[in-house]
Image (cartoon, rainbow, N blue to C red):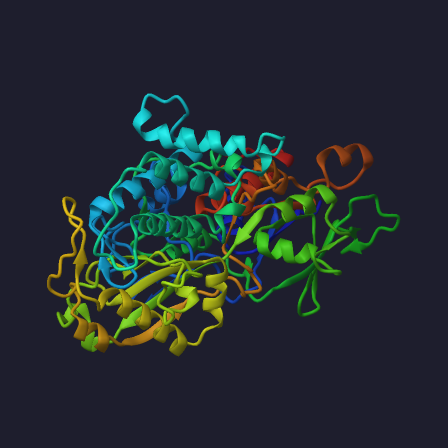
Length: 560
């Protein structure tokens, strides 16, 4: 009997398990392949990792279904009844519609000063993402966007349009806004805060949120031209009540025992871009063209390998003398890997001490707190607030009645968070909360420029000073050797074409059949291989289906 093609999938995350699920369950190819999933870690899920903290269900990694209209993740969630749970979970309330925006020093900002800047930022991002077009009938929304784009282009006329960044565009939009608002009255009663400083700091808060959305540590590295290619599904965004791991467990549940092998870290993949002079034998048959070497010294032969490791791992591999691939990946592939962006986003969870548990009514309403900081280099800043807190945008309960608070970190701050002890984190967060919520309530009314000295902030000064945290939990995606970061983005100097290049199998199809080289030896899946849905779980899902279908079609089975 002819041997079955052996397909080895490296990585048991969303893309790897989707590919395995498809290959194993395709009715036309049932039992037609020898299939194996090898995972370097001790668990399945990859950058999906549902956990529990403080009695609540939380997500250490992927959190949101980004648009329920047409999302395959949402469809699976519906089918397996994962959208409802008696147990509370992270972001079960969705996004807070009533955030409390406070400037450093305890100045509670009226919506009249926050909303115009927030609206400006949202319109600029919509424009960059292709949702608002130049010359649009919604002129009121795009005026500043058009001004920003014209200023943007005038600075880069000499053939440098490929170097436009989202960060530069946003700042041009802010400058256009300021130019149009020159005659505004100056604010009074905000201490050292001027109107312009406040507006810039509010804008920076939104930039910091955008950094966590994209994983770009600095929006100046995020490519403007590619931003409009990124696609989201329509309708609301939601979290999964039973946890994102319920999707992973569903995909894995139909695979037979032993098909997924944990603790199998791959260190090298030998492949054959050229015809080999000598032919090894395996059980009397011609050798399979790919040989996988594992950390424990064992090996495995395969006809096809689907590589689903993160872009961060691929970046590290091509920088090493002895990389993951032997021979090394061709230049068209390594150049795309080098150009694309890949950042770090971490989440910080803190549980309030039970004596201050909101469920016990001992702590009045910890708000969805939006934090407006002075610039990190400003002489006006509170020097007790640590630098790694200064580019966070918010701190809030994970849902309205939870005693667990959550804050997001990106870039250098996210990496710094991984190095800090729990004690250092508690001290830094407590100092920040004290600076923002312990001061006298100071509020700018929409029709007044005077200081209002009312009662203390909604959390009394004495209660803030007594606030204690019982536990701390943080993600550590940046230094985890199996991931080395969180998700990809199109960096300045890169393009959507690099994402397409990431998805190309090796050897190139045109070099194979006519030359007798075994085709489709190495295939690539994962969020960083999808041109329009990169950085998402559904992008990873689509990529796993794509590579499974590529192999099904190669063997003349019907893919879906």
